[in-house]
Amino acid sequence: MKVALQKGFPRLKKQLIKMGYDVVDYGDYNYPVDAIVYKGVMMSVINSADASIGSSVLLVDANGKNAAQISEILQRKLYTPLF
Image (cartoon, rainbow, N blue to C red; front, side, top):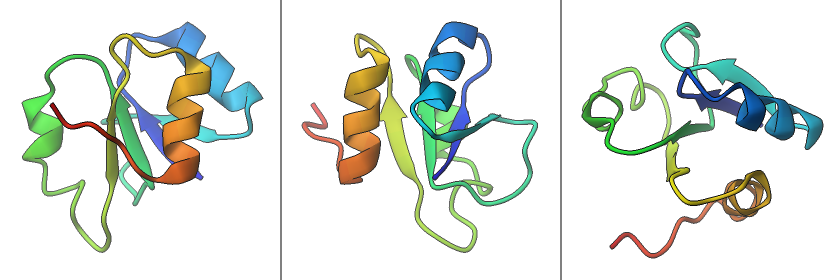
């Protein structure tokens, strides 16, 4: 699974790579991804044409989550609750 990760979280990136994910830096990778992992509000991600071209993209707010919790969301391809 190709995962784009917001820049500035090297520890999380290493942990996700160890779990078997193909992790790229969001903004530096110009090809389709399966998911975007970010922390906090990233309106540019939500409004980005890059995120919607060709397929759907799972958006995961990593705020307050560890790598194992993020991995569970990525495996289920479901993120709940929204609010």
